[in-house]
Structure formats: C-alpha cells, structure tokens
Length: 61
Image (cartoon, rainbow, N blue to C red; front, side, top):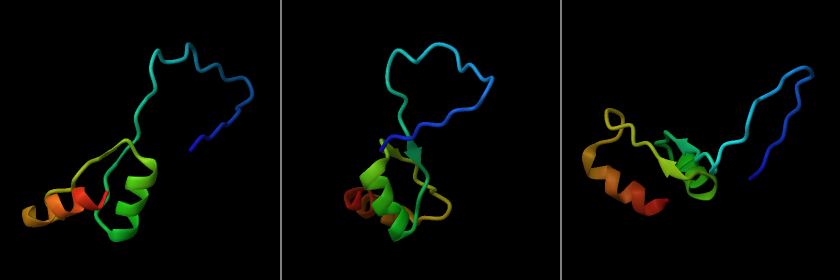
C-alpha cells in the first residue's frame, strides 16, 4: 500500500535510509484483518484484550 501527498512549500528533508514500519493497535475482527493485510506489526491493547485472547489474535493476523 503506497500513498503520496504533496504540500506546496513543504520540504520533508532527507528520505529515511530504510523503510519505516507501520504498526497498528487493533482489537476488533475487522481491524485485525487490516493489520494482517497492511501493517508491519500489531500493538496489542492488553487492557482491552484478555490475555488468553492475545495469542489467538496474533495467529489471526
């Protein structure tokens, strides 16, 4: 997934020397699917997700 935007008069500076990863904090089924498709990693929201559900959600990604 690639997105390009242009802002007149803005210079972002040098490009990073390596790709910058996208990590999502998700807990619902729809966002877990999006995380699996588009993200580089998952930030588990431990207070919202019971600990016994973390591993199954990791597998779903």
